[in-house]
Image (cartoon, rainbow, N blue to C red):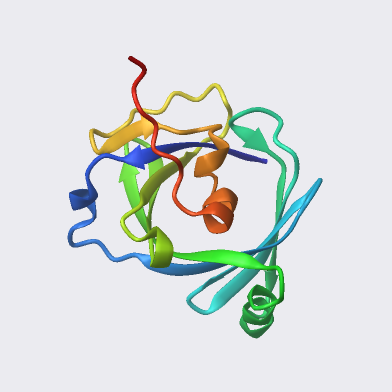
Length: 156
């Protein structure tokens, strides 16, 4: 079970001096189960994501696969993907994953934090911005398929 919250990053300066891991991730099928392949360094895995149970939770299964197979899957007709660098920052008992996107998404940053249950309280660091949990436009699958999320303007 994946239980996580997602946010915009308020200040990319928090990444100054940190080393990140480069990810290639591609989406292969979207239906009752979302199928994603990821490559990071010398590791690759296939992820199956079930239908969301709430805005924070959904079933998830991951399987290690050969890197060459993952790269080939990502190049299949109909696959769509994105590239990003992920940084891990520990803060008050939680690990925050900050993603810096590349290519057409360059300049976009997000922050995710996984939790053991939906009831867990998470102290947010000052560099974490607006929460976008549950906003489909900010899901990685949607970012890969549609690009930048629409800019929201304030109501008059």
